[in-house]
Amino acid sequence: MFNKKSVDIAVLGAGPVGLTAAHILADRGMDFTLLERAASPHAHSYALALHPDTLELLDTLGVIAPVLKHALRLRRSTIFDQANKQRAIINYSELSGKYPFLAVIPQSQLETILVESLARKGHKPMWNHRARCITPSAEGVHFTVDHLLEGSTGYAISHTEQEIEKVYEYQTNYMIAADGYESMARKAAGIAFPEIKSSLDYAVFEFETNTRLLTEMRMMVDHDKTHIYWPLGNGRCRFSFQMPPNFAQKHSFNKDHGMVDNQAQESSELSNEHLDHLLRTYAPWFIGSSQDVKWRVMVHFEKHLAESFGHERIWLAGDAAHMAAPAGILSMNVGMLEGADLAEKLSIDTDHDGRQFRLNAYNLDRVTEWRRLFDVDQNIVGEGKAAEWLLRHRSSIIGNIPASGQTYTEILEQLKLHETVAA
Picture 1: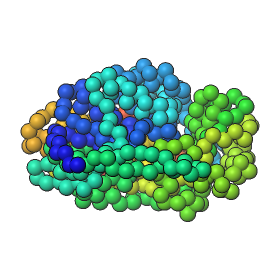
Picture 2: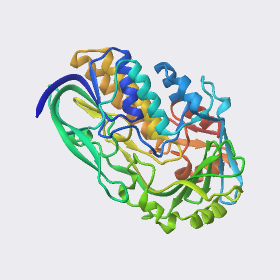
Picture 3: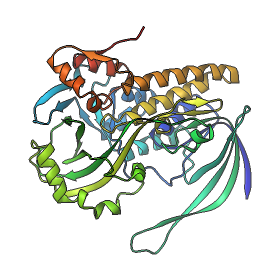
Picture 4: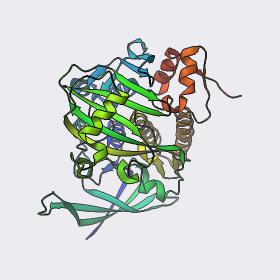
């Protein structure tokens, strides 16, 4: 059965980026729909912390209280070398903003808060709705939406199959593509998504331990590799160890909606024995138990940047436009700011010319910001021995710093670094 629908703005993807855009659109009283292929928020994912700038954004959306209620606050990050020597400290408590800390919160919890608060504003995601056959034109975007039904088969390991219950034909004036790194909307708009730096493979472990955990994010730089530690609260922590190339499968970047990665459970590279070896080698300061592993996964991270953040009626935010290294949690945090900015610009004007003018400015701002965060032009310089060491390892550190915007500039100053501006 086909049903025809029209809407001013269609948002694809109900992750943190799409949900943030939806909040802005709801607050502005805009005509929009939020479509998500999955049946619910993520059960697990790789993003786990919010930057100070993102917390200020969530404050404007009216959701900061429940976020901070469930978050662990970290007021510093440290950088260590391969000899276990501390090389730098990032002190978030010295920042000038309203929220001078990192807020560690599972993406699943963040999404739940955003969904519940969006419902109080009179909107909710259309779960199990898959967009396809996206066709942009000068007048708008036409696309097909499948309303999916889910059911589990009787296998020993639960296997979910999806069937199409209904098919809708949509016409929208503008589309906000927050539909992930394999974005169908980006492909339909014909926007190139080149890899701008070498890919990275990680072995990721979350486990509960019997010792008091360090309340800081830590980067361990081992020559050309960067290993990462995050405390999660309640005796849990996450370690991400950078592995040799070709360790993980390319498709492993898919953010899972389930709690168990069955392939990972059987992998020798992700065994408890290998975890203990990695801890002894790269985190000798960690003295707790590591047997109670809650989650383990191989992850293949590629560094991509869209050549443009939009074209005519389709505009990108989040993973649809960029992929970054995991330590800085940049794609989600900057993506949420992008989603808000994009929704704001579409809310100011209702005529096409006015919107297009603002969207072109959005594109220029976003491309410039990401070239800066990726250090594409290597405009970061510094003086002194500490800065010299950091710059010698710039490929492992720049792009892994958990900050953006003005916070990023302040943190560079703490590290005795600064950005030069080309004439």
